Length: 411
Image 1 (tube, rainbow, N blue to C red):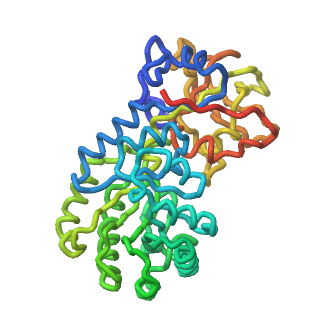
Image 2: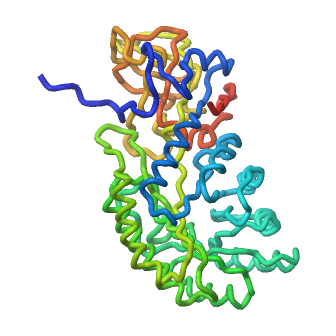
Image 3: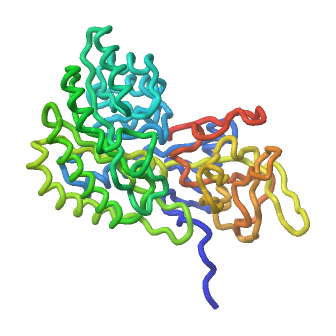
């Protein structure tokens, strides 16, 4: 008799004591009492600290690590990450304000994303952070705003490379893209940056996200460094920074294997040994979001009803896709797969059953677990959705059907 196939990624990031999930060393039932309501997100600061330490262990020592706060912009999380990493990348004026509240030196804060408004550009230039220019038009607007403010803008060129990160869950480069400047157009843009007397810092080359393949990451790193070396020949000054993006993935679904960070780091070290002399001492940056915080978070909601419909058991919870669009499968999944879900106060349980966990919304899309084997649960029990530290609450339609908002806590 063969063992049943796993339904989702393994539960390894949180301890289980007396069959109850522990987050930040606190039993989930006690944490729910402390928070005072469900649904809520809880983020484990020790797990974030450990993840950064793991990266420091395996990446070359002189590689700088930046936090892409779009993954989780909760101010308390950003404050904590600012004490661990070397820089922060923001993607809006609102995120910029949060980043500037941290101890991070503005020189190590960068601002990426298409469609920056004049107000965004003005804020960034006045703050002295580094703008990742996404187009020639944005370059011209930044230069004009800098003249008006009497401040020389600090700028990187965000490059849309002529390659993509293979096997990535989300491709950010290669082909036509709204992100960055096509690599073949960058030399002319660099000439213009020199003519405008902008303070050129370097390049931001981000080719993809959520990748679990070491070979794909190695190929992307190799091509990214080669592209940076080639483009540097047209720059008004040697680049001080080369941001080679991130793309490191985490496990969500059955069959996915954990990324071998030791191998990623050793491969990158070998590539940098050759590339560094040609980049004349440029600081190499890896920018990560999901990989730093994704596994450190859990979304918790409470079962309010249990019902059966034509042989199918439904656990109806007070939370759903309006708080956690990713777990519902409606945030980029082509074929819906279950996130890791457990009954948080009965992780194993003495009785198991096949159930679906749904939320309170009037749509069949409001589905947190579809036909999963979980511990037998009743109203009052807690549903915990793991791998929820990234792209959770702020990536979800919180106002849909005017349901109450979730809260967030860092423990």
